[in-house]
Image 1 (cartoon, rainbow, N blue to C red):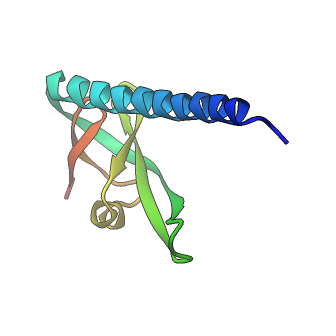
Image 2 (image 1 turned 180 degrees about the vertical axis):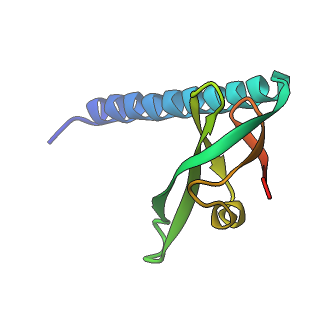
Length: 118
């Protein structure tokens, strides 16, 4: 059986690691938000070249009920041939189809809209 002070030390190290990971993720999120806010809003001609959905599953420890979250991503190709993948809402995802051409508006990595050509 491990002495109490060894268990306490291991618990403290694991707790510090969890807090460090949380802090790193928080700093990264705030950095991306800040960078997007300081980026210019651009509107460019673009084509929808791909769509994908990713899922994450979250379960609380007090419940056996899980929550499935869908994340929607669309890849756009601009006139220069460069491609960018942006996260979009589920409603926007449903309105876009591969091959659609139009005007993409974005700010940094933040999707702001897509106006399809008629």
